[in-house]
Image 1 (tube, rainbow, N blue to C red):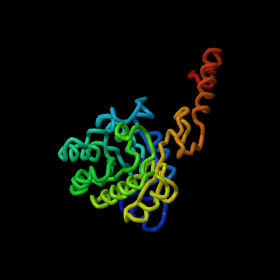
Image 2: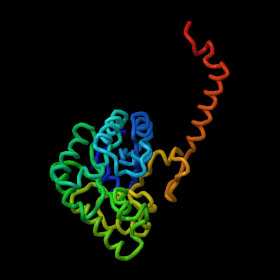
Image 3: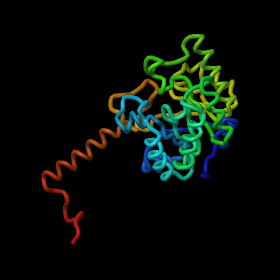
Length: 266
């Protein structure tokens, strides 16, 4: 399969072909996902929750993101790599937004960045797309806004919220973004936005009518403990498999049955 670009992502929507996106935070997982023909690898600031053990994404820094973006880029051959812009990397000034987005592209090797917000960040999106940095938008439940939202709550249930999210989606498209993530919104609203926009929508907790879907890879693989949002489908329970393997290893070491001659040098 040839290298996927943002032009392919738009073509997929135009052709009615669904887009697959998963998060990735390291080289081995990126290599595996890439080999499974995942269209987009998102190096999310969710790395703070699922890898770094943080309560939310707010403490994640540019250095954190650059470290993980570089690792993911080393592991992929064909997928499009999108990097999250962490909290305060784009809100302070347009100059900082350009510089930090540029670092994720130039030093990190990402091919696009993702920014949370709609009308409130339209100037930021436009500032980046104007200098040829591809941008993916993100509206609805935006984790960097959890304090304003009062936690991780579905957005768009009320009519005024639906109108606001539609306006946000149109602002993202107007600013030149190549796609937009719809997170934690009613399926009916996600369908309306998808039909209204010419750019692809990628849903997470937004129903089946988006142009594509994204999930956190740790949730998919059963590596998130007891945390399982309603929209997550767990395709395997790797935590149990890993525990079984490690327990056998510990037992064999303590019993002196590993390593055997097979695993030793003469």
